[in-house]
Image 1: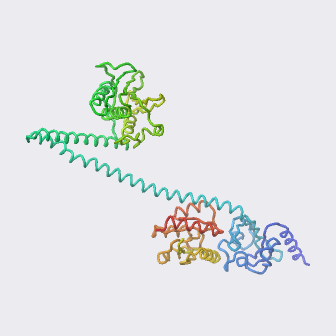
Image 2: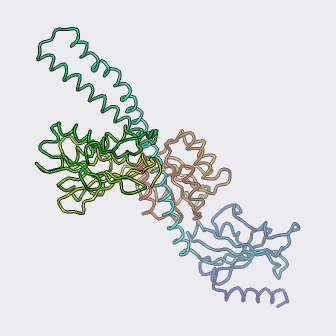
Image 3: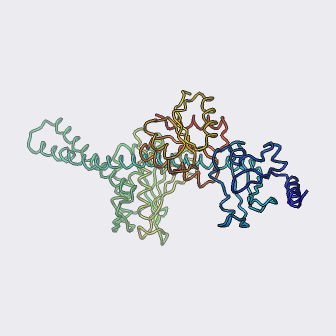
Length: 384
Length: 125
């Protein structure tokens, strides 16, 4: 045995004891020069065949072949080791490949490749990657759905805006013409009554449209708050007087107080606020309290102005808000199931309070009693 | 489920052979085979498959770019990426390009079945 054969045998023995697959390839011809015992068990005697054919099942040199990276310009070993993960299509296994070039004892320049089977690790990584992919696809689908929803919302708002403005024009005839009828025609008493009812209905409708326009602006943040001096005591008195003549009041008494003691006639509680919001807010809360109150129950409104930062209007009635809706009481379309309820009264009251920089709260802690308190900062638009 | 017409795009003859076998086992029809991304883009419209099974690493045009180009001309195309690459960035790029599903090699018949059924149910008219 000459020196080169001895050296070759020694190298092969070294490679044989390594528990991973090793193959050695002539870099010029892709001919397999040697496979170690570990590889031989699965590959058989592959020496003499081309690596791309036997190991990778390709008729041409592999696309991923790294031999060029391992050679100098003159085709000699450059000392570089490349490490990469490779999926073997033929075996359906993942390998981590470590490759380097060297001089083989017979004088040829060869690449030796150590292949460590990492299929189990890759399997776990792949399942994770698939889970990520699944999430990403769902996110993409969700964003597409959200975009459609947003477009629908914008379309609905657009239609509502048009409806509100367009409804006002024919309404002016409904409000104006009854007076023309009354002034110019000698109507029988019954017909006059009917015409007045039509006029009233027109005014109510206009009021509702204006309120819904305000609500819309509050919701979209387009409302421009214009605070002016307001007398809360006067507002409370007027609202109570107006409602007490209406059927909603039935037999309820409305008790007005200031810091817990009866509100005196002529007494005033000045504050800054937007009457266009505060008037309907108080009316909504008082109507809710009257409707929720049991027959002959008393409804109270207490103005508290003993805090230097803010004022509070608390509307109190007997009866309880059902526990199921207490947390959602000021959300849109939440009603207590009363007939004709829109679920907008408490919601718009909350929007109005917030537009002032204040807030609204339900107190259901006393059994059999409900309190809704609106807090308004003394300087509207700034949170106290 | 009703048989689907599938276009298989992969530069590895071995993978194509395995994929065709699995698809036929599942009762689907292999409508066309393309061995490059470019070929897939060129033939997509004429083949009009229900689903494309697309490899990522191919010599002339990779699967992500081929997906992007097919989606540009056929936004409702249903492309499932089938690849040995497990890197998350590849996954995200393919999905960003419009892929509707993702299968990693080695392809298991159950996973292939499940992905094709999901994509068909969600995206086929």
